[in-house]
Every structure is written in structure tokens, then in C-alpha cells.
Image (tube, rainbow, N blue to C red; front, side):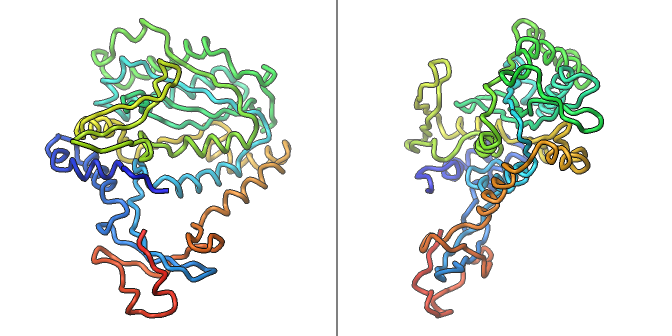
Amino acid sequence: MRAENEVAQVLEKAWEEIERSGFNNWQLRTLRAIKSCRTAALGGHVDECDECGHIKISYNSCRNRHCPKCQGQQREKWIAARTSELLPVSYFHVVFTLPEALNRLALYKPKIVYDVLFRSAWQTIEAFAGKQRKAGMISILHTWGQNLSLHPHIHCIIPGGTVNPQGLWYKSKNRGKFLYPVKALSKVFRAKYMASLRTEVDKEEIPNTLFDHPWVVYAKKPFGGPASVIEYLGRYTHKIAISDHRIESLNNGEVSFWYKDYKQGGKKQLMRLTYGEFVRRFTLHILPKRFVRIRHYGFLSSSWKSEKLGRLQTSLTKSVVLKQVEVIKSWSLPSCPCCKTGKMHIIETFGRRGPPDLHKQGGENETASCIA
């Protein structure tokens, strides 16, 4: 269901202010794409149901990874690929968070700060896995807090075991209850991050307060099984800073949106920001051009998977995975909004001049057309 209020509407209302706000060309290009998403500015296409013949006219999506409207199809394709790689083993969820003292550096050198975050998190997991064993990890970067503040952290999905050089599986020694002790993970992570950061930036750019407080590594309860991993991937992989459905209202130059206040036990609160402040916070989370925000490591990396993952899956039994793959692949085409059973196929495309006149084309479907 389409949200009543959208990020795109905020951008439309504030566009003159946005153009004067000093955003760089990449940020402006991203904001313009989101503003134009599913409007006549991007052209469109005509879809027809393969069962009842229902016709629907839709405007094109911008396909930008920061757009609230464009994540569904990309998420489904990515999840289908990951589902085919699942192992019938325990999976763990670990979150590596950067301290607030690094936020200023992240604003000016985001690529360096986030690349080092990925690198040091993996180096930490490698250190605990040991030199003779290879761990696996999928990492997903999130840069936001619930109130759109800058809060860089990565969510890591880690199978509960390692493989030896021959590709044989070794189950985690902790009886499936936890992966590694979080206090030890935190200390190693901080050391790895600082060592790597010092090779990337000048000493004067590194805040002196980074060792004043413990760094946060959070280990959640293990997933209930492969199905739980897929549910999690569906919610988190292509998530963006704020969804349209969290926006409550747009009134008098202000945006009101819901957020969870974790300092009060996750209580739902309503925040109000001016259009300009809302856009400023939203823009904090536009990643550098071509930056990869989902990364795979160890025996879940592309090179290892292509050579050995199939054999590992076979040895651990992969029957539960195959069933899930088929379910996810069936979502690839949108269902017909009329008969609910057919699938919508593109039969014609059009540019910025607008959709074709379906009534002139005639046919029994001419009264069934609509614009999405």
C-alpha cells in the first residue's frame, strides 16, 4: 500500500532550499532521482495481466538504492541468491558500532571510515576463528539511528562454524548459544580499527577520546534456523534511513515522523523537523558513489563460493534450502491487482511525453486501464 506521505514529497516542497544548501553533485543527483521516482519525469511502461488482460500504466522507478520506493525488487533478487547459499547450520547476528567521536570524520571522509569499519570487523572475526580455519560473514552497513542521526554500524550474519583448507566443516564450540565473547570482540575490534585508521588518515584527524569509552559490539541471540536468516535479510539488507510509512504528516514546513526511542525501552515517539533539517539528516546517509554496502567474506565470498560452497552444502544436507529458493523466486513478477492470480508483463514503454492513449488503441481492455 502506498504511503500517504513520502520522502519525495518533502524533497519536492523543499527543492529550492535544497539547491541552495551546498550539497555536492552526487547528493543532489541522488535527491533529484528520489524526487522524480515514479513520476512522468522518468517515463513509464504499460503492463498487462497474463490471465485477465487487465492493463495498468506505471511510471518508472529511479532504482536508486537510497529511495524508499525502489528496494523491494532489488531485495527479492538479492535474497533469492543468498538463499541458495544457505547452510543448514546455526547463524549468529553480530553488530559492530563506531563511537560517536568518529562521526565528524565520517562526514568528511565517509569512504575511508566505512571501509575501515568493514575491514576491521572481518579482521576481528578472523582473529577469533584462528589461522587454520576460515570463517564466513555477510556484512550490511547502516549509517543511521531512528531519528536520522549519524550512527554508523554494520550488521553481520555469521555461520556458527568454520572450514579448514580442504573445505570441511567445524561446528562452533559454544554449543550454539553464542559465537564469541562480546567483551573480547569489542577490545579486538577497537584495536583493529584504530590500527587500520592510522594508515588511512593523518594523526591530527583522529579524535583523542576514542579510547575513553568501550566500543560496542553487540551479539544478538542466534537465528532460529535458515528461515529466520531469510526473514532477517528481507528486513535489513536493502533498508534505508527512513521509510515513507514512518512519516506521519507534512504541515507548515515541518515533517513529523515516528521513531523508536531506545533510551526509553524502544518507546514509539513522534519527532518534528523542518523540511531543511529533515533533508540535511537524510542526506547524511547518502553513501559515496559506487560504495559497496553489502559485503561477503571468507567462505561466503564470491571466489570461495564458486569453487567449494556447493560441496560444503552437499556434505551438510541442503534440502531445506531448496524449498525456500523456489518460494522466493516466485515473487519476481508483480501480481495483477485485478484478478490477483495473474502476473503483470510489460507490453509497451514510453518517455517523458506521457503514456499512450489506450482508448485510441481500442480493444476490450480499454476501460480496465489505470495509472499507478
